[in-house]
Image (cartoon, rainbow, N blue to C red):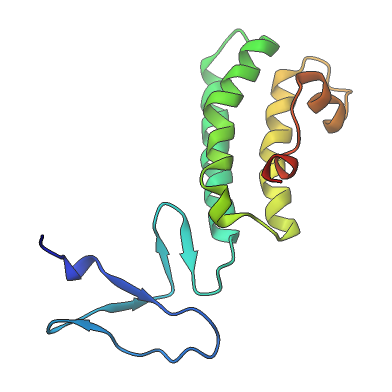
Amino acid sequence: MLFNTDKCKVVHFGYKNTTADYSLGDVNIQSGKEEDLGIITNQTLQSSQQCTAAANSANKTLDTINRTFVNKHSNIMLRLYQSLVRPKLEYCVQAWRPYLKKDIDLLEKVQRRATRLMMNDKSLSYTDRLHKFGLTTLETRRL
């Protein structure tokens, strides 16, 4: 099996880690600060970039649903959210589980927006909308 050294990168984790140079054969491997392996991984192992990418992708899908569907019946919108949007917010969440409040709020904001799109009655609170549709917060789902 051939090994492509041009696609290899080294990410040094930790603050006291010496940034040694690595090579495969006679080719030096590039050093980087982050790498996208399906989830965005950086030196500090914070999930902020992954949360931003997931929220942006989910918001784009929600925008597409909002523009495309004329009939915005609650049941249809709920099924679209559960099948197209929520998986983007939960993809590999076991590996990058957000722990910072700003990241948790960023992801919840997408679900909050989705539940507003499902409702005709805008007076209900977020928790009431979740209860009405039988949903839980994304934080509760991660537990």
